[in-house]
Image (cartoon, rainbow, N blue to C red; front, side, top):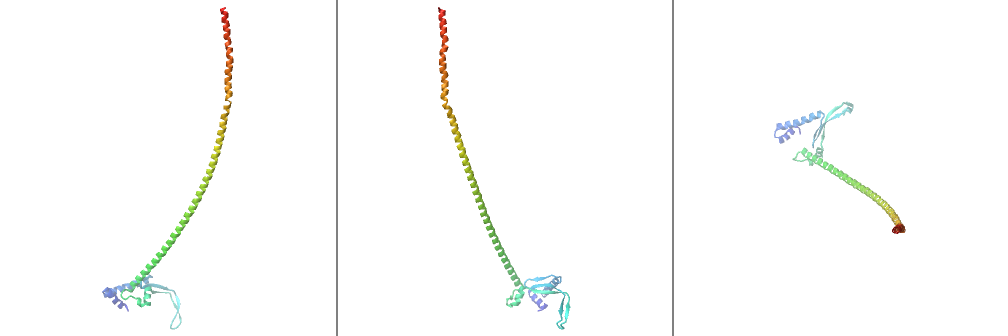
Length: 233
């Protein structure tokens, strides 16, 4: 197949020989110009056109066998795509009606989707493992916090119990001292009650002395009576 055959095949699709010829020339011209600039033209399902740099080397003339110095040069290169290679290895896999490159593109898209799905599955597994590890870490932290809280509560309870015991002892001591003080006070109050009869005796003693002294006061009355009797005489 040559260029004219390609144009005829394109004419079946485009409906015009002129349009087919222009389309084919445009494709070839674009590929050549891009490779000359050092770029790369990659057609999915078909292949890749690029430029290769070849260093200077020593070769051998196949006819004479003499060594020949080959200078540095550049050359175009075409690398067929995976689908193209598969079709060449297994011609039965080539579609009869649909474009081979379109089918190859679909296959590439399917492979890309499968790769993306695998990556997503791996990411999900990693996320699940990370979540599980985070949950276990949280559980461990919760247990540690619970243990520390229990220890603090036990320490507070012990301190409260000891404080209560100390308070109880202090209260008991205070009650004992209060009882002693009350007993001492009552004894002190009861002691003067025994001295009361002496006070009564003391109070009654002046009364008797007063009774005894009363006749002494009456003696002058007798003298006045004697004076009156003398006056009458």
